[in-house]
Image (cartoon, rainbow, N blue to C red; front, top):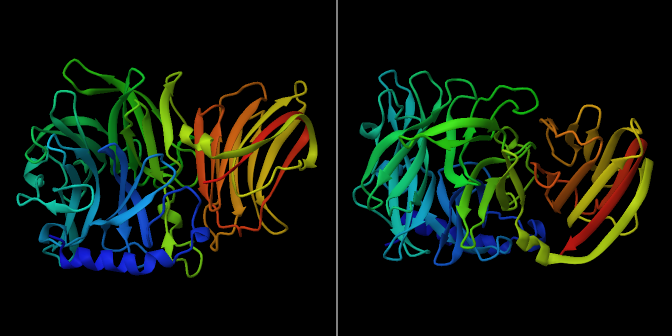
Length: 493
């Protein structure tokens, strides 16, 4: 039965969501029906379709009492809007239905596992949040919360675990038929850890082990975990809060962390490598799914908690997801590329080969705001150029810049003049693998964002932009001389 609070959300989105014109949204990135969107939730395959839930506040474009919004797709590009799936309508989730995961049950129903939040007052008079894990089961459209909620609470934590920071279960069904969930937690030293739980039926859970712990090395609380096998490795993704910069690999604030390793004889996780997931300005809380064809697909919230106040006036939706990405392990690192379905949306190719770039230049047919473009540069000899720039979404007032310095192997994304209405962090620099001054960039533009895939997916960098849609020029610039190839496709969806 649909609760009054959930029905209120569904009525609101049904009444006002259809009035937002498609032209005011990205062409192929997922956005909320109306209002606010943050973390992807329940990114999973159910009855042959990909379902994407998300943290949702339909009633305004600001973060508020968390609901679960709902989308589904067959191709990761065209998103069908479904009614809101969950609302904070029980005592155990009255302060919000926070992030979680989804899995298909043997009887054909879909299980949602989420963090229920309630507030209690401390002896000193302060309000604090208590976080527990809850279950809802449904048919891909309507979901009923189970009577035994919460299914995990403070009694199920390991010694020293926090009942205040205990959230974001990512659930899956193992090859042994059991269900597993990784959940973020804060330990006695104040930093994050990822806990592993197991269940025979999806409702009764037991603690198995701590997979990995922060120990105040990579941020503090570890949120939004995911755990899976990939390319002969075990991969643990999480999103740390309160990061401090570490070289050009990790920036300050909320970040993304990929821990890569192997399974120990006792079933635990042994860390081998640490890297960022995305090196841009806007990417957080990624989740993955295993597609029916065997691909591991990742999607993230393409936004930054530090910049959520920098939104256009009178916007009726806020927050979008990244382009879903195929991920793999290449040379011991996490690699990512846009889902291959994007290539079916390409229009005719515009190709330029062996273009000499010295100073700033533009090329016939190279412009637009919804496109897929690959740029390859190579030096004309040692020291032939000092830097290279690509200017995107450009007019007389605006542009978004990608700049590469070969002597430092540093790529910088700069959206200072990209239409954001507040003075916020607008640049990010990161190291790329040296290739003798050669560089390959695949650039995806979709009205309000740019996503860059470096050297065949060795790294990715994402950023939201609000440049007016009439700013469509693209130019290339070098100090010195280099040769460049460009292949560009308009995207038609």
